[in-house]
Amino acid sequence: MKNEAAASEKPQKRARRRRWPWIVGGVFLLLVVVGAGAAWVGMKAFTVKDELEAARPLLSSVKDKVLAGQASSAQGDADALAEHADKAREAASDPLWMFAENVPVVGPNLTAVRTVANTVSDVVDQAVVPAVGLGDTLSPAVFKPVDGAVNLAAIESVLPVLEQSSTVLTSAKENVGAIDTTSLIGPVKSAVTEINGLVGEIEPALATAKSLAPVLPGLLGADGPKNYLLVFENSAEARPLGGIAGAQILVTADQGKISIAQQTSGRDFAFESEEFANSHVPREARDLFLVPFGVQSQNNTLTPRVDVAADLTRSMWQNQRGVTADTVIFIDPFALSYVLAATGPVALPDGSTLSADNAVDVLMNGVYQQFNGPPNGDSPGLQDAYFTGIAGATFGAIMNGNVDVPKFIEAVQKAGEERRIVASSTEPTIQDLLGEAGLTGRMPQETDSAHQVGVYLSDYQGSKMDYFLRTSVAVGQQQCADGSRRLRVQISATNALDPAAVDGLSIYVSGNSGNGFGVPVGDLRVFTYVYAPVGSKVIDITGSTSQQDSLVGADREYPVARGVIQAAPGATQTATIDIDVSGLPEKQIETLVGPMLSNPEMSELQFTC
Image (cartoon, rainbow, N blue to C red; front, side, top):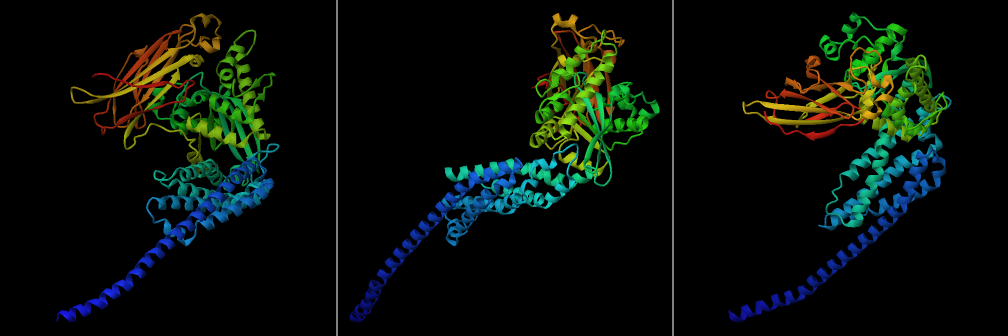
């Protein structure tokens, strides 16, 4: 039995001896294959790197030429760009590359590189090449008026490419933006960041053009004349919407040609009847903003509600001038200065020049100092003529094509974000566009995490003293000893006028031209309006200069506290408003402040109750 067992062991040992060379060889072969695969993937990675690096300056060059309206000169760059992008995509699509993406550490980097290569290829094939193929037709200049008219046929011809290009850029932004860069090596992370930045520069403008271009012919009167009403506000006489309504221009668009139909001033409108005002504005809102609201054109901006101000203005034009303007646009001096950065300085009828640098000072102070009574005769009329001339000159510069379109778009976007350009339209298509562009303004809102408080100021002496108004707003929330929860808003107004400059002040700046308020020359006097969160209750208004003119009221769903501050030159006065928010869910407090010449200093208020 022992010999049989020994005999049976020998073949097994020989078999094992015969197998081990094959095992070692297999492992060696596997290592060779893996090594070769790694080398192959590495070689492909270098190809992708080289092709993308070659594509990078070409992509920037084509972008710059298209935006400059020189797409026809970019054809050679576009052809070379397409070749580099295709080679990069092909190299990153190799089966071994796909397999290697599952390898720890290395894999995420390869996935990121493939995503970048595919994104660049998609952008080039579906956006860059078609755009360059249109030649100089596709450029910001297609939206620029020439001799007062926009080429509607040119706009319609680029619609398919705009649609496709915007779609692929949006997809590219989403794909690259989704890459997690935390574990990527430096060069790969830099490539992801760079392509993300490049796409991010172009995508928003294309998205705007994509939404605007299809409806633009209709907005420019392709289907019949369209009327637009531009209302220029002056923030030197503060109003919750942005400033007193001054120069007004009715613009008509017909078959792409845009022209000024009428020019006037808010002062030129007669007072409307009480019946008219009550049919457009709730009585409680009229009580808040006092008698001129609802009956006087200049004071249609007493409300922070854009739709209400637009409705009043539109209706007054219909009543007194027989003209219907579906869309009303309010523009303050800062917004106008942003636009002037896109048009460049404009020459005024009196020989002076208005620019982005001097517009705010000229519009909010210089005009009233220049036309300040005798010997200027009808100073208000001269002021109105000056403002109308400014509005007409700026509009004329735009319509004559003297405008940098990308800068103009940036100006409107910036002014919209600051609520210095706001608008409202009765046409649903236009109203939707205004909403998408952020130009419809907004009221305080409740979010998942916060209650918002609205703070607005309004001149209360018919002056332009708010040129010297500087403010600070402090807001806090406390749990009180009686179990209630209280919100406190403290508004401080400083009169920045040098007391030594009072004697040289124009009566149109001081407001002391027979207004009957009895305010000392050089003092500023403003209403403070605090819109409390919906569902809260205003408890008290203290510290106001005039308790007699303070009021607790409402504007539809909002409880509103109206305080009064009067400050002498160099002095600071404060109004304090307490609000009971016990009935609301406990959340943090955010503050929404109306547009003013000088943005207020914001702080958190500590107090006891």
